[in-house]
Image 1 (tube, helix red, strand yellow):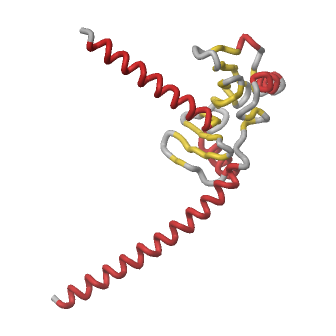
Image 2 (spheres, helix red, strand yellow; image 1 turned 90 degrees about the vertical axis):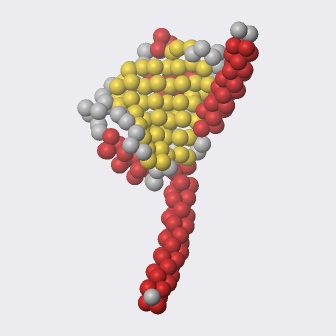
Image 3 (cartoon, rainbow, N blue to C red; image 1 turned 90 degrees about the horizontal axis):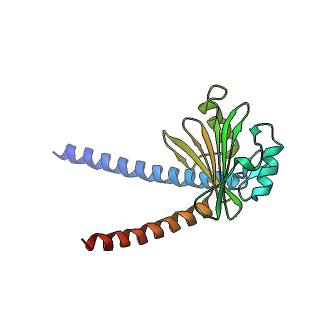
Amino acid sequence: MKRIIICLTFICKLLLVTNILLAQSSIRDEESDNQVSEQTKAQVKGFRGIEIGMSIDEVKSALLNDSYFNYHGDPDVYFLPKKEQSLIECRGNSYIKRAFFQFYDKKLFIMIIVLDPLKIDYYTLFTALKEKYGNFLLFSPEFVKWEGNDIRLSLEKPLWVKYVDIDVFEKLKQEGKAQEKAEGITLDEFIKDF
């Protein structure tokens, strides 16, 4: 019995030391990730000179001058149900199948580039983005996400690249929740009338 107690005590001490070492290693990894995050924040901006925050006219001009986009001007611009939002949608050339540029208050806040999986594969693009932006913030089977300069960059399956202005996106999300809540209250009041 005494041997069992000694063995259990030894195992407990060994587990304690292992947990301490793992915690220290985790802290070092976090510090290293934070350094990579700082480097990433300085780099995430946009694609081929089109950057989050640009005006709608600047994006139109950049699209007209870029051979990867098959943009023909204003017929490709759509106004969304909310008056302060608009969208440019255009076909792409070569590696790009389609592209979507969404604006809020005439500033680009979402850019989605749909790539051609017959010409470029997910793993190749993932590897290139990881080299350029460092360690990712989040990895899942559906997407990989980096953040920097208040911009979220995600590589999504099947083969989409998204740039999102985090502040504007969160603002619009909160506005949507507030409206949803107000509509929910009026629906409850309506149902009570029966």
